[in-house]
Length: 252
Image 1: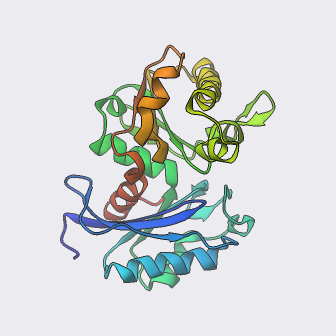
Image 2: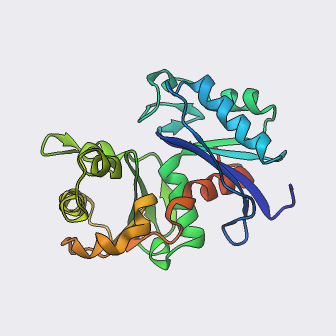
C-alpha cells in the first residue's frame, strides 16, 4: 500500500494515539483508523512503541508522519503538553526512525498538521488571509495560517486568560472534567476567542477537534465578531496532515 497517492499519518494525543492510511488526493482514510490509548506515563519510548504497533497493524511500509502535542524545531521536541516532560529535548526523528525501522519519518506539531490538512481539503476560509485554526481536545492546539501557509509552533492554548491557561479553561477536556453544559462551555470559549481576536485580528477562526462534530451546539452561541467556521475534517485532520508531511518530507 505505498502507491504515490497514499500516505500514513499518526496523531499522538493526550488520551489516544490514532493512525490510518490516507488518500492524499482526497484526504479520506482508505484503511480503518487504529486507535490505542496513550500510554501512561507517556514517555518517548512508550509512545514510539505504540506508534510502531499502529504502523505494523496497518501493514504499512512507506513514509510515516507523526504529530505531537509539542513545539518541534529541527526535529527536537521543545515542549511537552499532555505528554511526559521527558519529551523535552528528545530528537524525535531519531526516536521514531529507530522505533519504526525506517528513515522516512516526519514529525511535527499536531495543530500545525491539522491546519495543513484543513488548508488542503477543508473549508475555503482556511486558504484566504490571516486565519487562526484551533483544535479543542485534551488541550487547545493552534495554527496560524496566512493565505494557506502555516507559521509553525504557535501555542495559543497556553496563553493566560484571567490568570488561567486558555486550555485549562476552555478545552473540551475541561468541559468533560467539569461537566459543563455546551452553553457554559461556549461562554468560556467565547472569552478565549475574544482575547485572541483582540491581539491577532484574524479574518476567521476555524475550530476543529472531536467536539467540532457538535459545532451546531456551541458555535452559534459565540459572540466574537470574527467569523467562526467549523473545521471540515473534524478529528481526522491531524492524521491527514501527518500523512501529507511525510509525503512532502516536511521536517520543521
